[in-house]
Amino acid sequence: MQFEPIGYFRGTAARRYEAPRQGVFAGGEGRVELSPGRGFETALRDVEGFERVWLLFVFDRNAGGWRPTARPPVAAPGRRRVGLFATRAPYRPNPIGLSCVRLAGVSGLVMHVEEADLLDGTPILDVKPYIPAADSFPSARAGWVDEQVRDVWKVDASPEFMAAFRAVRAAGAPDVLRSAALQLSRDPFDSSRKRVVCTPGGGVLSLRMFRIEFAASPETKEITLVRLGSGYSPEELDAPADPYADKAFHRALSGMAPLVEKGEET
Image (tube, rainbow, N blue to C red; front, side):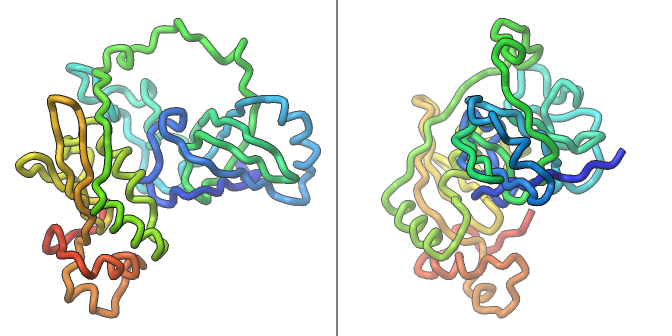
């Protein structure tokens, strides 16, 4: 079996940590650009009448093979790992993904969508309409998912963090505010799943070479992003080598001391 993409997804999430686990909870806007010269303009006829569509896509950013078990992003009590086919984990025998997105409009060969959890450049294999009568079963059992502890932390940001965030965004950096909220809204201190170091009253989250200091209130389930810093040392920022093509973002933080002396890429 050989499949040829019918197009590609375009959005703001370029790195895996920027993508939400499920688009309906925290997904962003984007568009599906279908390939020209294949009659897809006609294939899109009548699609605008649907509020949602299914996107079948390729997990093209995953290295390595599939795994028979997976660790749920929000584990159920006593279920540290579950069988792969009982999850939506991306490491699968065939790296095919399925996402239900909200359709915002169609223009030529472009479908504008919302609540998307795909990375920029993701190959699209097919588009199918979401039909509530056939696709929705609200009372269906959901296995171990029904056992999840659904604690959600509220994430806010301090004025100091926001000033630094605006500086790095102006330099072209990814949306680390949104990524931090995604990482910290559930199990914020789970160091086995995210690069977080606990500190008195909070912790430091690493997103690539960014370091985000946060304060936490377990009683109210509230987190405040206190400060945005860099994992690069001043000497590293002065060096010409830029293997991750991100030093311009971190130089925008040059007036701030690094939160850690040195960080590593994951």
